[in-house]
Amino acid sequence: MSDAAAREPLRLVRWTATSGSNMNSRAAVVIHGAGHDWRASAEGNGAVDALLRAVNLALADVLGEAPLLLAYDVHALSEGPSAEGRVNVRIAPPVSAKGERSDGRFSGEATSTNIVAASVEAYVAALNAMLGAGSWVGATEEAARLRGEAGTEPDPAEAEYEHGTKIDTTAWFNR
Figure 1 (cartoon, one colour):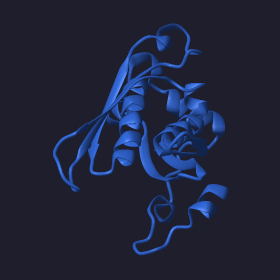
Figure 2 (tube, rainbow, N blue to C red; figure 1 turned 30 degrees about the vertical axis):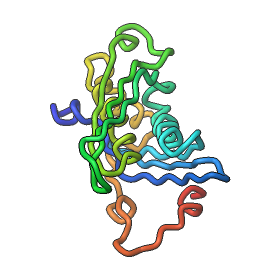
Figure 3 (cartoon, one colour; figure 1 turned 90 degrees about the vertical axis):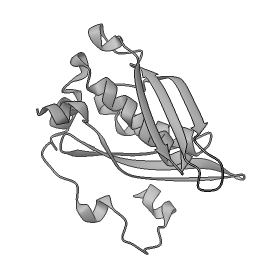
């Protein structure tokens, strides 16, 4: 495994979230790592919670169970409608982690004008920090190998939405 792969084993390919006052929030994610696309959807208490739950479900084969969310902070970097916000996330390994994998605290940070996007990106950055720690290195590759799908690259047509295409999120969730 290259040094770059050890530092950034996961890449958030795409995500979607729906939320409203008269509905449960739902989210779906596609995360690429170790030559495999990890996909899941989930419901949650708001768009951010649904996204983090979807990430955890997508990576269940890698992590075993969800990491512990220790801190989630949002900071406005300026004022106005185009202001960016910085999201900081801090996690600990899953309770089920054994031995050296049970140690450590890992942080991720992302900045965007879209706080929902920054939230899921910061969470994936924290997971990358954890998966780059010595005892976790290779966990993504091992999970992909066990699935028998290592070595496949994401289909570029699936990885990005076509410009100008209207996305039917209900169909996206149901596939």
